[in-house]
Amino acid sequence: MPKLSFSLVSPERELFSGEADSVSIPGTEGVFEVQAGHSPLMSTLSPGMLTIRDGSRERKLYVRGGFADVSPDGLTVLAETAIPEDELKGDVLGAQKQAAQKALSADLSPEQQLEAQRAVDVLSTY
Image (tube, rainbow, N blue to C red; front, side):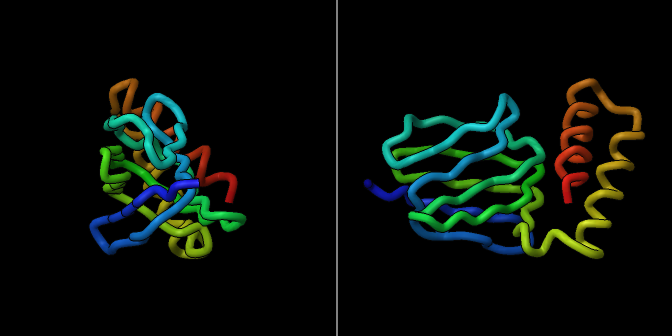
């Protein structure tokens, strides 16, 4: 199986750069999976878990906001927030939950309200 060239970057750091079998991305229109040879597309990110698969290994990261760009060269995800699943605990989880709850109670458009609710729902599973 050909490998997908993939890069995941947040404002704080580069979280992944390398090859993977596939990447599942929480897009605004729903979760989609990218493999090598995928048609070009660009999507905004919705709050959720991005999953990197390579062989039997699976790595999950919470993402919120940003863009996914699929090109002939591979996949690039620029996320406003990206936190590895194993770091999504304690103070980090608490801060993310608090920010999501605060956004949910703000005066937002229906689309922004939906995004805030998605973040609350995802974070509530941890």
